Each structure stands twice: as C-alpha cells, then as structure tokens.
Amino acid sequence: MTDPTTGPVHPTVDDPVVGALSEPVGGPVGSRVRSQQAGGGSSWWTPLRVLLALTALSFALGLVAQTSCVAAQWRGDGQFARVCGSEIADSYTGSGLVEGAWPWSGEEETLSRHAVLEEPALVGLWTYAAARATQAVSGGPTLEDRYGVPAATLPRDPDIRRERTIFVAANAIGLAVLALLTTLALSRVHRRRPWDAAGFALAPLLVVTGLTAWDLIAVSAVALALLAWSRQRPVLAGALVGVGVAAGVWPVLLLGAFALAGARAARLVEVPRAVAAAVVAWACLNLPALVSGPAQWQRSWAVAADRGPDSGTLWTVLDDSIGISHDTVLTTSWALVGVWVAGVVALCLLAPSPPRASQAALLLVAGFVLLRPAFEPHQALWLLPLAALARPRWRDLLVWQSCAVVFAAMHSWWRGGLLDPGGDGPAGFYWIGIGVHVVGTLWLVATVVGDVWWPELDPVGDERPRPDRARRRGQDGCDQVTTMRSKDVVV
Image 1: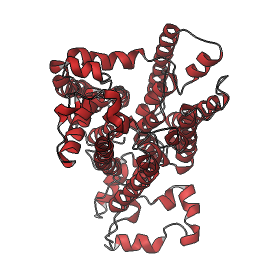
Image 2: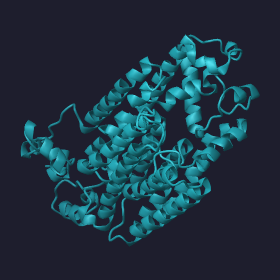
Image 3: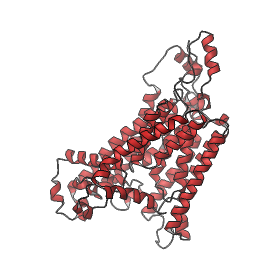
Image 4: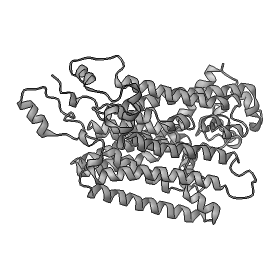
C-alpha cells in the first residue's frame, strides 16, 4: 500500500491560512481523503486541472477589468481612474505596427512617423506577429494608403480603433496561454507540492497587471527554466533563461541563482553549460533585429540602461523632493544593486543548508526591483513565479501582493493626475504608494531570508531527499516511494 505521507501535500493541511479558510466547508483534508488516495481513488479534478482552471479564471477577471478601457479605446483620463491602462494597446498605434512595418526595418519614412521600438527583441517579434494576425483578421487593410495620412490622425480612424481592440485580444490570447504554461511548470517543480502553483494561479497581481504589458513572456520562460533545473537539465534551463532575457533583462539573474544553489549542492559544474545555452538562445532570438536594424536594436538597450528616476522607486521620491542628478542616480543605484548581490551571495554561501534556486533567484530579482532607478507596477510579475516556489505561504504572498496592488492603483491615479489635483506640488500620495510597494517587497524578502538562514522554517524543507528513509522502506519490502525522484532537485 502506498504511504499517504508521500502523496501530494494538500494546502489545507500545509498552509495555516488555507486551513483556516477551509473550516466553513469541512476543514482541512482528513484521513478519509488520504485513505481514498492510498486505495487508488481518483477524481477527474486533479490538482493540475484545478490550477489551470484557476489560472483561466484569474486571467478572465483581468479581461473583465479591461472592458471599460476597451469601450473608451484607452483614451482620456478614464483609463487611469479605472486602473486599466495598457502598454499593449498603446504600442499598436504608437509605433509602425499600425502600418505593418518591421520593428527594425530602418525605413526612414517609418522612423520619422513613429517612435522607434524600445522593447527587447522577443517582444518586438511577438508584437509584429500579433499585428500581422490582427490585420489579417480585420480584413487586410491597405497599409500603403496609411502612409499618406498624418500619423497623429491614425488613432482616430474607426478601422484602426477596431484593429487595436483585435490586437489587444490577440495579445491576450497569447499571454493567457503563457500564464497556463507557467502554472503547469510551477506545479511540477516540486512533485509533492503541486498546489504551490496556486500562488501564481490565484495571484491578484495576475488579475491587475497581467494584461498591462508583455512581462508574462519572460515570466513563463523563468518558470520553465526552474522546472528544467529541478530535473537536472542545465542546458535546457539555460536556453530558457536566454529566451527570457530576450524578452527582458532581469531573467539573467536566474543564472546567478543556479550558481549559488549549485555551489552548495555539487552542481556548479553544470552552470557553465547553462550559461552557454543561454547565450546561444539569446543570440538566436536577437539576430533578426540585429541584422535588420542594428541602430534600433541598440536603442532598446540604451533606453533601458539610461532610464532615470521617473516612476515607482525611492529614487523618484528623492528626485521629486530634493532633486538629484540623473548620473548620480544611475551610478548610485547600480552600485547599491552590486552591494545587494554581494549580500545575497554571502547569505547563500554561509547558510546552514544549501539554498533553493528559487530562493536565491527571488532575493536577486528583488534587489533589482527595489534599487534600480525606475519601476512599473506590472514589473512586480517578475517576482511572482519565484515567490510561489520560494515562499508558498498565503499570508506572506497576500501581504506582498496587497502592497503591490495598492501601488498599481496609486501609480495609475498618479499618471492621470488624480493624486495631485492642484497640479502645483509633488504628489505625496504617490510617495505613500511607493513606500507601500517597498515595504511589501521587503516583507517578502525578509521571509525568504529567514527560510534560508533557518532552514527549519522553510515550508518546502520536507521536500529534500531522505536516503535513510528510502533505504529503510526498501528493506522492509514496502513500495519504494521516496519524497523525491533521484533525478529531481529541490528548487
């Protein structure tokens, strides 16, 4: 008979918050359910299917939240008041996509009519494919005719308004698939803890910011990379990191997390292979942009590296209140990021037990989020898959995400001028929103630091392999069910 203690960890038993919430419907899972599992009982609603359904529900709620902006075509201050602004919608009419231009074409007429693409290469390829699909679905507009119309008037064209709605819908379908893929990957990282993926599937952040930009491209790549690393496939993990870096710089920190986790777990030799695979994957995805438009490709990197304290960070507060030079912010912020990384390295190397890769990655990315010069609400999604694995406790996830959602609302209202009605002074309420976001992120960081330094507090600590228990069960003739397959690694 299968030992029920080796089956999936149920959240009503494992998480105090979920256990308390389960009381109105009968309380935590008990011996009857465990005996049914041990006897081979099953249900069509497996943990994975439930998690995928919850992800679809969260994404559907995000779509509903966008409907008011769809009706208003993302115009006026209404989008900021309703917290439904979208970089995706703006990109269609604010770039050459509306005229079917290749993002890095270098055509002079395109460059003079529209802003140069400032997104990473994979996002550029994604948006170009979505724009072409949009124009095919909408009936194939005569793109050449649009060159004879002033670019400023294009967003007012009824046909283009309809196309923009279709463009957002095309992106939403693709991003929904990536969200489901992310949940699938997270649910399989820890074989006994599939429900940890609910921290992503039911995330308020996913509802509020999932359709704001294209961050889910990199997020899904990171989740798949963590799954590959847990299965001891470093080349695949590195290639997926390269895919993520092609959609946003921050996933490169995952390579550092692999190194920190591998240094203490005799896997450091695998890291160079992961790095090489990441470089190859990144280069392949960037090659079309680099070859067709090197100047535009370089601009996307230059804009990201040179962005100042224009929103979302403590640097913004300092700049608004006392004034601080652009160069000073850049130099100091990146120096502090370096100090943060050194602290994470020291913590991981001195901790009593090897840290998990998701823990190291969360700490590294959190420093990048907190200390870089600028931050947008949708960039909190970067931490979401890492938090679901590193700290699968709903109390801490909700504390952090509540702060992030408050900041998202305050940021939107600030952009619409709703936090500074007089227009004659700094937006102090926006500063409060920034402070809430910083405190919430530091709360999450503190809980993970505690788990690393005191491994007995780690909710995932029981997933570590226990060869003495596995050997004893084998000698007794019982089913050889271990807490983790021999080729798996705790992430």
